[in-house]
Image (cartoon, rainbow, N blue to C red; front, side):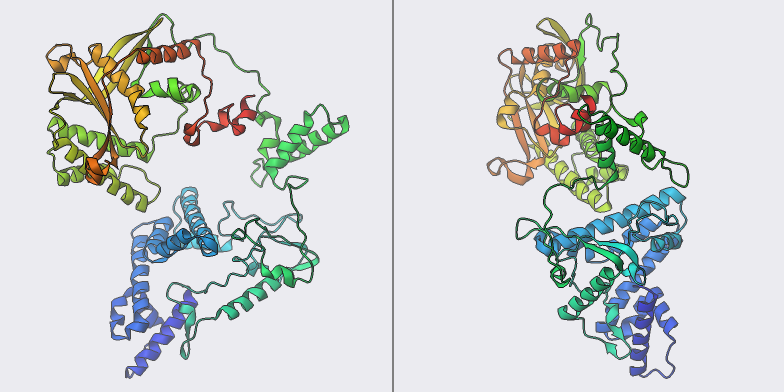
Amino acid sequence: MDTADLRRLGRALRDEERAAGHRVPLPSDTLIARALAEPERLTAHDPAYARGAQRLGALLRKARELLDGGGTAEEALWELWNGTSWPQRLQRASLRGGAAGRNADRDLDAVCALFETAARAEERTGGRGALNFLEELEAQDIAADTLPRRAARPAAVRLMTAHRSKGLEWGLVVVAGVQEGLWPDVRRRGSLLEADRIGRDGLAEPLTPGALLAEERRLFYVAATRARDRLVVTAVKAPADDGDQPSRFLTELGTEPRDVTGRPRRPLAVAPLVAELRATTVDPDASEELRDAAARRLARLAALTDDEGQPLVPAAHPYRWWGLNEPTHSSVPLRDSDQPVALSPSSLEKLANTCALQWFLSREVKADAPATAAQGFGNVVHVLADEVASGRTPADLAVLMERLDSVWDALAFDAPWKSQQEKEHARTALERFLRWHVMDRGGRAPAATEHDFDVTLPAGAYEVRIRGSMDRVEQDAHGRAYVVDFKTGKQAPTRDEVAHHPQLAVYQLAVREGAVDDVFDGGRPVPGGAELVQLRQPAPKKEGGDSLPKIQAQEALTGEWVGDLLATAAGRVLDERFTPTTGTHCGQCAFRASCSAQPEGRHVVE
């Protein structure tokens, strides 16, 4: 709602005051101030008119108090966004799908772009205030533009909305994205409280779909008539009937639309253009003249700079090209072959069964992404479970939630709603843990929690040193050692995968080699099995349902498969055979751009 909307609201409220019998009508500005600063004083008016103004006033007052207290424009935007029902309406529309769902998706994308722009402005300027941010945003041709506005170059392309093009002309105009559902967009206009309906004579009727269609047609006419010599109108036509379709306005241009299928003959963006030119310069089948022309064009692109002297197309310069330097080789081996190969239980499966290249890049190169909020979630739950098992914290959900609250804000989430959602998941996980902690587990009793161990195991021709920590070690009714590993991930292995789960098997093997002797009075217990406790996932109904965690047990070790697994892992490390292996794990891999098994990485490493 802008100033004009507020003044219309003020005039309407003043008319209401007159109708109520006030002798001295209040000026419009006073009523506006009342709506913003003291929305509760509007209770004397008809709720049908005043309720919306009260909500708006309370919301704007909260935003103003936040800014007065030193809050940023991004925080004020979040306060305004979160204080309306618009997020819920967009979510419902998006989930319903169809044309309305696609429009809701675009609206959500636009809101996200606005928040990103506010965050970037805050980082770039160091806090210049909300008014400066709004002025800068309004001065841009496109609100989501991430670059500072520069003076238009004579030979530059102007990019703007149809509204901003009024009164201007160019020799060539391209009206892009003329899709049904976007143009025309016959959704009702106006703000949250429909201030556009407030007039001198009271509330006006909302525009009919026919009136909105006529307004959209006039706007399309404005865009199309900006061209002096040539007009190009583009749209996308999906094969499916429920996909994107061209706007009905295309048939009103007086020219039959022409279908263009296939890829364009020339790249339409800078990055693919540079890629094509680079490929041409080294193409042995291209003529010498063509290769020379491509090299000259790359040189021109590489020489382009902005007003601050920064290159506009840095990828055009050969210094930025992959493959010009020879591959490097190290004379120092990754591991000393005379020493045991040190591995952790959690990394064994990735090295032996998942992808050796992923293990090498994440564990040895340390190129993995920083810790995520999901990892922080797991760490917090593990610590609280350890405190309960060790007796440092009572097995009481209220106490655990109080401990959780004290550290939760330190976890970095993308948005407050995501933080709240994950906190509820953490509460559910802790409830399941407490019920599992007090239930009868076949006579097993806790022996140790977060038990560190360091053992060296024989593995064929190699020796493997396993260092790690067991979440919980229990003693069963037969005096055997049983290892429990708590999991807080959203995925769980299958039954067959659990039977040969490397991490659980290594825990049992470590028990066999004396990893828990100190908690069994110096005796050497026999491993009695191990299990995964999936705190994020409910147990099957016949095993307790949602109130208990899903339990995935591994029987006591039999056979030599664990030793073979260790030997395979140790051999790959010592021989430095880190070849990629594709699978479902590739979808979440952070190294796709450096992996020869993926199309996006093949051009980098081959």
